[in-house]
Picture 1 (spheres, helix red, strand yellow):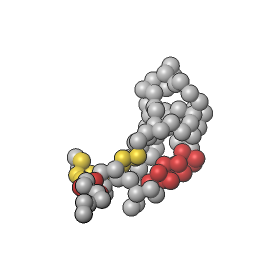
Picture 2 (picture 1 turned 45 degrees about the horizontal axis):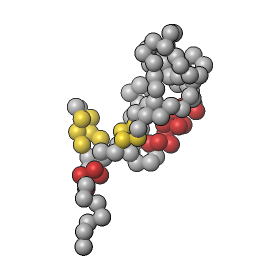
Picture 3 (picture 1 turned 90 degrees about the horizontal axis):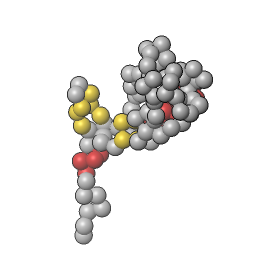
Length: 96
């Protein structure tokens, strides 16, 4: 009988730099348009990311974020990562 999962290492922890990730599964970036009108972190955006974390993935990558929030925004609700003022949770680690 063949094993259902040939890739058992996918569910094992991995060390990336100085961080240990609980598994090797990533929630791919998706545009949510849940930032505040000025590009800040909203409670809705935090809720969205928390719901992604509850899936059990090891890494969550936030969706589209322009590098120039003044001239490069191409949709309403784009997250502004150009300033520490608008990204107070940029190093947020959610408990497992």
